[in-house]
Amino acid sequence: MLSSMNTAPRCTFAIISHPDAGKTTMTEKLLWFGQVIRETGKVKAKDGNYAKSDWMEIEKERGISISSSVMSFPYNERAMHLLDTPGHKDFSEDTYRTLTAVESVLMMIDSAKGVEAQTIKLMEVCRMRDTPIVTFMNKYDREAMDPFALLENVEKILNIQCVPMTWPIGSGVDFKGVYDLRTKQIMSFKDAKDPFNPIIIDAKDLDSKAVIDFVGPKLLETLKEELELVGTLIGDFSIEEFLHGIQTPVFFGSALNNFGVKETLDMISTNSPGPKPREVKLAPFESDSPTQMIDPQSTTEFTGFIFKIQANMDKKHRDRVAFMRVCSGKFTRNQKIYHVRSEKELKIPTPLMFQAQDREITEEAFPGDIIGLHDTGKFQIGDTFTEKSKFMFTGIPNFAPEIFNKVILKDPMKAKQLEKGLQQLSEEGTVQLFTRHTTGEKILGAVGALQFEVVKYRLEDEYNVNADYEGYSFVGVRWLKFENEKDQDKFMANNSSNVVYDHKKRICFSVRSEWDLKLVMEKNPNVHFFKNSDYR
Ligand code: G4P
Image (cartoon, rainbow, N blue to C red; front, side, top):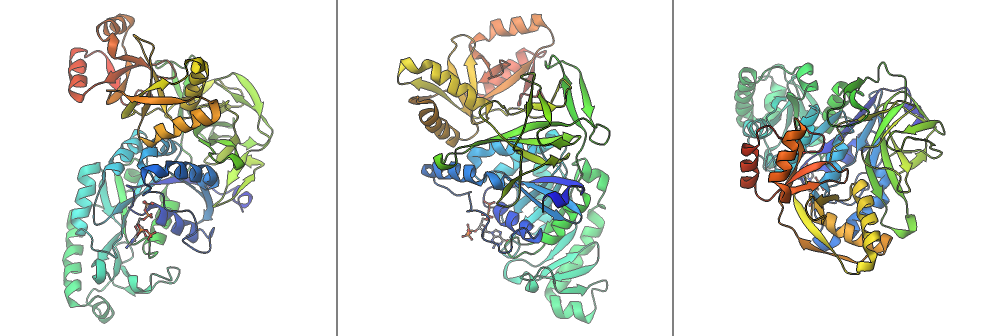
């Protein structure tokens, strides 16, 4: 099936949500509409609610489910690539990186709760590339917030204009369905179980007998008032503003009951952009090196970058897969490609493409496609591949960690193995490695605590190193950019105990408290502080 999609335009997207808002349920329904799976409830176990001790199960599942890292299906004459993101918030660094490889995002909101913490963080990442966002207000079959309040909640917290495409009629036990603001039809929730053949009521005339009979007088009165307000308060949907991440089209429904899912998928497949031009940095790849754009429309040279590396925790299936996003040109199996960081040419004899639960060797891949490369430790997150050009894609940064630990080595004879293990695991994106400027001490930084558990286990299992942790009093790091050498020397001299280097030897400031950071920033107005290593 994948090869039959070769000429179809690509639509590469991901779902963002706070755990429990319904991402897994929605993923399954999208695959069902894409006719990749015949039954729902089969894709994978729900992964948002593990207890801490279950980290290994999560890792194993992530490893084993490498195949579900990219779920491809044809829809509306497009090749849809849905990139999976971990449900557990402790692995959200993986999600951040995956978001650098997509062209659009589906945002799931739990309609009873509104915007939650994790969604705010993920939205910050989407903002870096102004990624277009389609919004789904989920769980309308349960008691939900008033729709206006919900839209205001999203607009205020996430700073994006909401333009409803459908409007809910009631919620919870009173949920009747939605009014489609574009077609002026009512779609009945009663028939949600057969979403391919929903009951549709023509509602151009809201006083028609069919509408009154279906909605009932009380809810109809509310609906009329609300639709009038929508008409006066909310502007029209603009595709341009959607494409720039300024507006988000909003759908109300229930993923669990297949309700509103098809309309959402129709919106994504019709309006989400295909592969867009991407920025590259020219040699010597410093923060101030010149940049240029690689446009998939006009660039025939094959280019791509690695955004994720997934190791398998199950010894029976020991392999590691690096996920490459194709950005321009055509990738062909066994063609010689140039690995820019190592300046070496290599061949990929077994490039993988993914379907819902399967992987297969592919002969070719096109812009927007994701291919899996077997990795023996050669590849790093952010690595660029070309045919011969020497440039590197930007926009695949490290994101500021929030928790830190010092590594305590139990057997001092294993210092070399520890160093190698930490370097490799940080290149793979499992954890971030920092070195203190003054003492040379190694410090690990992570977004979620479970990342540390994974590192400890893998150090022992793969590098034969027994290590422990001691908490460290940082609360964050900021990547630094200086305007000149004099500023840099002065800053380093005055703040030496707070200076750390990341695994690529870039200079960072370790944050001990937000207050501290504020003071240092005020004292050094010429120094630029960034929350990610791309200096954005
Ligand atoms: P996540 O991946 O974002 O963490 O969310 P997931 O899809 O696992 O959904 C979280 C819970 O919310 C699940 O219930 C799921 O069935 C439920 N849910 C998802 N969409 C809807 C919806 O439209 N309406 C209602 N009423 N519930 C919804 P659970 O009880 O935690 O798990 P399960 O035993 O049902 O799988």
